[in-house]
Image 1: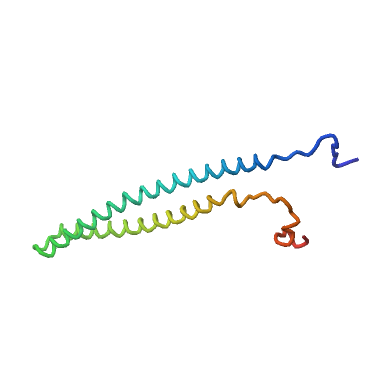
Image 2: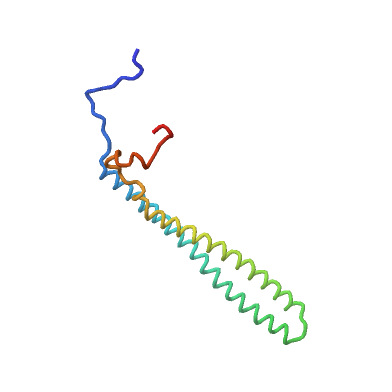
Length: 137
C-alpha cells in the first residue's frame, strides 16, 4: 500500500515572486501604518503630560517662593508637597513614554527593512556556505 500518491499529471504550482513582493509590500504598509499611529498616540500623551509638568513646575516655584517670603502657612506647605509629588510622577511617566517612543521608533526602522529581509534567493548554490539549516547541511 502506498503511503503517498504522487500525481504526475498535475504540476506543482507556486506563487509568482511578483505576487509575493506585492503581499510583502502590503504587509509592510499595514505594519508601518499601525506603528505610526501607535507612536502618534504615545507622542500625544507625552506632549500633553510635558505641558502639564511645566505648569506644575511653575506653580510649585511660585508657591515655594510665596511660602519662603510670607508667614508659615500649613496649607501652602501641603500644596508645595503635593505639587512636588506630582512633578515626580510626571517626570517618571515622561521617562517611560520617551522609552516607549524610542522602542516604537526602532520598530519603525525595522519595519522599513521588512521586505528586504524576505528577498527571494535566485540561486541557492551561491549561498551554500553561508546559511546552514542544520548541522548536516
